[in-house]
Amino acid sequence: MGVYYTDMAFDTDIPSHAPPVREIPHYHGDALRAIFVVEAAILIVGAAMVVSLPLSTAGAVLAAIVLVVAAGVTNPAQEWIHYVNGVLAVLGTFTFGVRAVDTYRAGIDLSFVFVLALALMSLVALYLATRTIRGMILRPQY
Image (cartoon, rainbow, N blue to C red; front, top):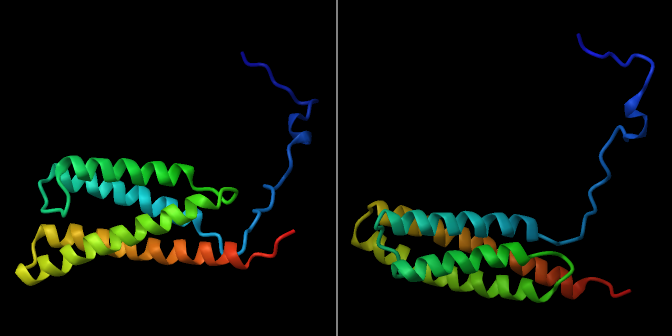
């Protein structure tokens, strides 16, 4: 037999809606964080599948660690991390973009798919990091 609470209302102190999302103009850190984590996962999977990455196995794992740490530190309160994210996105776009073009010219295979995905994700990350930095620079100072 269970105990039934019919006279007590336990949910009267619980708000019926979630608090509003605090929007920060031109802040794209949340999307950038997700892209970096997915890129890190693709790097690890690619290294495990012996895909022809422009990094050694140790380099791919180290790059994945750096991306995940940068994603973990990214927040709207610390401006310096957005510059770091921009640099990481530039490095990723250049490194994986050059390899994607070279791999395409040599013939499309599994390596091309992995490296192209990394290059395109880095390119989107670069765009988001640049917009965030621009928003921080143009943000009115209180």
